[in-house]
Each structure stands twice: as C-alpha cells, then as structure tokens.
Image (cartoon, rainbow, N blue to C red; front, side, top):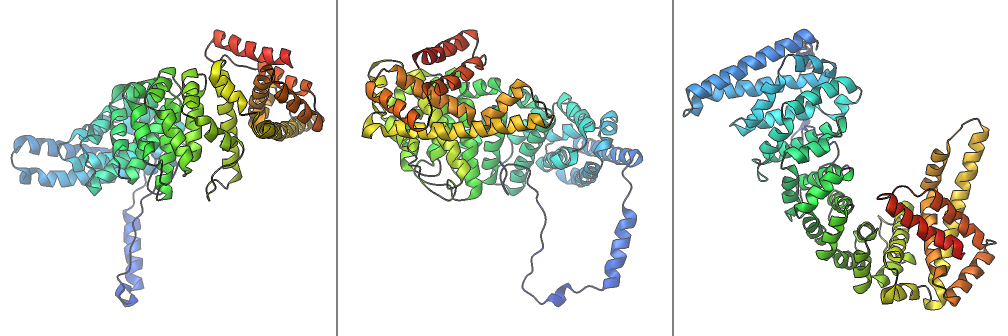
Length: 527
C-alpha cells in the first residue's frame, strides 16, 4: 500500500525549476560556492549528549518566553508574535535529533517530551503543525529501522504523555482547504502509522482513547479524491487488519454502510489514477477486515452489500476482483449471506468467474491476480455449499453443475489437477530438502503445502464431496469418468479430505470444529 501521494512512507523533497531564462542567471563564482560550503561545514555540530542538552535548554527557554508573553499580552498578538517565531525556529532545530535515534532515551530522561507534546494544543495551529512534523521526523521508519530499543523508549514516553489523544484532537481542527493543514494531516497519519510499526498495540489503543476511527470515516465519506483520503483509507485498513475489537467498534459506528457507500462510487467507473486505485483497494481491504465478526456480516446483508457486490461484478470494472473477495468474506460461515446471494441471482455471475470468464485489463492480465481470483471464487462456492444445506436454493446450486453437459464439473476437475500437481511438486521439493539435512517439523511442512495451493485443493475436494453426496447419478458418473481419465481414483480425493479433516484448526471453538470435521467425515465415508 504505497504511493507517491497516498499511503506508505512518502518523501517530500524540494525542487528548483528553471524559469526559462539563460543559464547565466545561475552562474556563481566557484570560489564563493567553496567558501559557503566550508562555512556551513564549520557550523555543523556533532550530535551527542552535549548538543542534545544545548538544544533542549534553548527550546525550553523559548517555550517559557512564549508562554509568559501570551499570558502578559493575551489581547495583543503583535507583542508575542516574535516569541512564536523563535519557538518555531527551536522546533525546527530539534528535527536534527532524527539523525541520532540513539539519543532518544536521553531526550526522554531530560523530560522534554511533555513540553513538546503540550504544544499540540497551542493556540497557534502553525506551532502545533511544527510539532506534528517533528514527531513524524523522529518516528520515521528509516530513522528507527536499526534502533529498536531507543525507538521503544521514545514511543513509550510519547504514549504515556498522551500523544495519541493530542494528535487526534489537533487533527480535528485542521482544514482540508489549507495546504499547510493538509501537510499536517498527512504527518499526523504518518506518525500514527510509525507508532503502530514500533508498538502494534497502539492500533487498538488509539481507537480506544481517541475519535480517530470517526475522523477516518468522515474523511472516507468525502466524495472527492485527494492524497489524504488515500492515506486515511490505508490507516483504516491497518487499524482493522489484526484487531477484532477495532472491527467490532467500527461496525457499531455504521462503518459497514460508510465503506459500502465509498466503494459504490466505483461500481460503474474505474479510478482515474494509480493512487486512486490504491485507495479503492484499501477500502476493500477495510471492508473485508470489517466482515470478520458475525454481527458485521449481518450489517452487510441488511445494507444490501451482497446486491452491491454483484452489481460491481456485472459492471466488470477494476473493482471486479475486490467484490468477489468481499462476498467470500461475507459468506464464510454465514448462511444468511449465502441465501441472499442465491435469491438475488448471484449464481450466474459467480459461475461465469468460476469458468474463467474474467474481464481483462492491464491489471488483471497478471497471472497472480487471476490465480487469486480463481481461489476466491472456489472459496465462495465452497461457502455456498456449506451455507445452503437444503431446499430449493440447494437445488439451484447443484443444478449449475449439470448445465451444458456438466461443464462445471469438468472445470472443477481441471482445477483439482492443477492444484494437486502444485502440492505434489512442493512435497517432493521438501522431501529433497530433507535429504540435504534441512529438517522441518510436520507443522512447517503442512504450512508450506498450504502456501503452494493445498487449501484451495482441499476446498475443491469439499465441493466434490457435496456433489457426490447429492447422489445425482449424472454428476457421479462424470466425476468417476474424469478421475479415471486422469488415472486417479476416489481414494485420491478421500486422502485430500482426510488431511483436511486431521488439520482443521479450532475455528470458532470446539463445537464449530467438531461440526466441520463431521461434514468432512461424511464426504470421506460417501466416497
């Protein structure tokens, strides 16, 4: 999730552009340049504890002067304006500390952090924005890359001194129309991302203690695209990706509806730039994370999310694959979403994708994109079979595999062979590695097989199990014929199912695990 003006760690660099005049305008005596260079070098101080104390004392003095001047002349800004300029310059000087992260523990010990953070509430928003820029510099990913312990000391001190609350409070007074404020918005989001990078628990902490989630939703609601809307979408995805608490919290704040409205903008049009395309992916990442808790799946169905995703698929724009992914998340272990999908005629659209009729563009010509989509559709169909166990909807689902002389069973077996070959190749490769004295435990071996396509192979075997257990003579005959053509037997499918049965995790508790294993055992017995 990176881009030049959206998420990720972007760098702003100054640039000088020619005004079209003759190059002579820029001719400067070489000896003068040399003298200037020597002069600047002589002014550079070594960054050590002594320099740090000097910087901190100077900053604290200017801060005190500013506070006193504001208290003395509260109604005469011209009388404290100069102290504000001085304070701005001191904050600029403190940025040099980003060049010596090893000094961060000393900075914390000097008790300067509370003074710096207190300025986030300064009446002059320019001063507050200076602090935001300073924090972004001090916590920058490149600065902290090889400074784990000093980074943790700084981040812990920032959090103890309410950096999260102060940053978000300041964020709420920034304007979208002011360029300096827009830069401060970016720097605020970058600082929060940096803090999460050093201390992952910040992702939940910032949502517990502040109104950041509400601010992000407000930013995403704005129809116009800009770089900060893109970055807001990225931060939202980061906050949701590993936190059930944040997923539930956002669901209670009408987050499902807001995200559906945001992606609906792209149901019949494509993003206009790569940055906007990245934002759309972030929005879908957030939506998929949001669809993990059961109550949010329910909100998704009530908000007609199933219908919207089908419309997006039918329009065949760039959000096509993301819509399939969102449907897969919504229908996993949630029968009401599966039932709604069948009721609103989603089967035709899903099976078109299953048969490989995927809209082509520069983006999805990439092989990995097509494979991801293929795996999602297989998962979606497996969810449909798991969620619709009886009745007319089940019959409609099964009938799809009889259409056009069982062409979808042919496709299923084609996919079965492809993923089976991949898993076999990976298993052989691991066996050869074992011969070279590189030992792997069973769990690592299994995980590597999953990465090579075993999970998708297992889902295909599960779909075959559902088809076989329907006891439909035409489907059974087709499956047996195709297995024979590939020199396979029903035992090969049973072996895949058995491995799946034996390695099913705890899912959502022991009861759910037992039910899942019971279903797989039924297929094994039937074959």
